Image 1 (cartoon, helix red, strand yellow):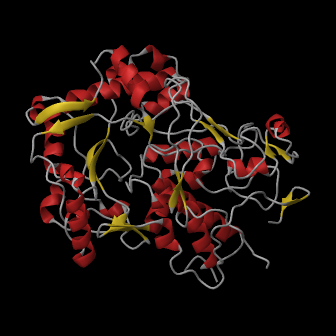
Image 2 (image 1 turned 90 degrees about the horizontal axis):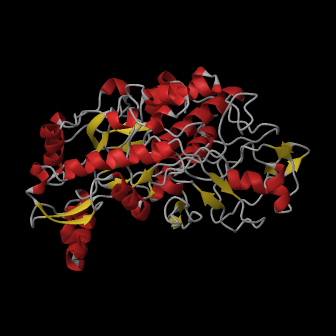
Image 3 (image 1 turned 135 degrees about the vertical axis):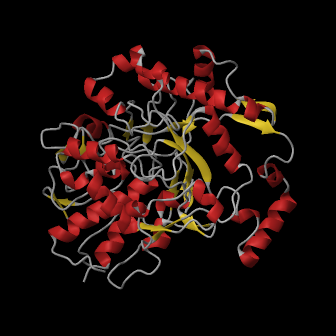
Length: 485
């Protein structure tokens, strides 16, 4: 059968594109990184979603969009206003299905500004009617500690402590599949249990993401030759520029009765909660983990005054000092760049993933200072009075002890991107242009998190949906289709 478009994958970006084009008249995949040189040679879990919906089936379901400055910087890097903050917000509104905050008393903690959001899109976004008991106290303690609150961390300025909405409704997850592929039109064929192993070319024209591109002969010639793969197009940037957000927990035990999550160690409690949720959608499953307090912060003098900051390129210093750019939530902004390369020419072999965590000195300095502040908040008098034991924390707040704790405990937040980055003509490491077209070939585009030239300061499921809408818009206009549907 002949198809007008073939979309490989079904994550947020792919599902958006497939659905938008068609309407125009998940179990985890258990990857591991290679041993991380700066983390005591530990291998880090790098699981990805495998199934309709991709990683939106297994992610934390946090919905954060990041600062407007991220999108304006993307626009500057690729030289195209299509990617600026103004157009990004237009695209966010295309898929957002925000629900009103259901409890009046909660409006003093979270109140998404209507001018920045849409309430009609297919991706449901909400906060629950009932919150976990300690959430309001967490916000109040943070304010008293000196960390300001933010009623809408998705307004384009995320700085501050805020209540994070989830990608879901009534305690049920929204995935890319439920949002875009649940009712496919007749002109959209969905194939599952189908492994894409190679892209077929006629000359340099396709007729049929980093791993698939490399298996198809698109990448650095030396790397392809090492695996006996015929070389089609020399794009040395394929599989490079890998960026991610590292994550580390700080954990204490609270006084009995201060938190509800501990009850979940009881199998009978879990069983009863599931039964109640299945019956009427209420109970613990409609409350626990349905929203959390998330904070994005900056202005740490110890970071800005450090040698590590001074050694950054001037343009990176400028970007970091933009007023809405956070330097930490989970050490969000990280100059480190890693790689994702082939292990062999066998399509079923997982790639060699090297995020190169903490290979850049600035990441180490930023993370150390972020943990120091977070630990001070965790142990401040208002929190300490309800703490009975410390489970996970550095031995002390010295640089050496914090760094040892990082090395032993840091993990990924599962936000990898950038390995087929977008760029201008003349950028030797760019893989796609501003129309998502793979450079040097015809009829082949990449539209997923691999194209980001810089990883946004957010939880990146929102970025996946955004990329899908941006790419669909470009394809629809280029092919003269009608997006009214």
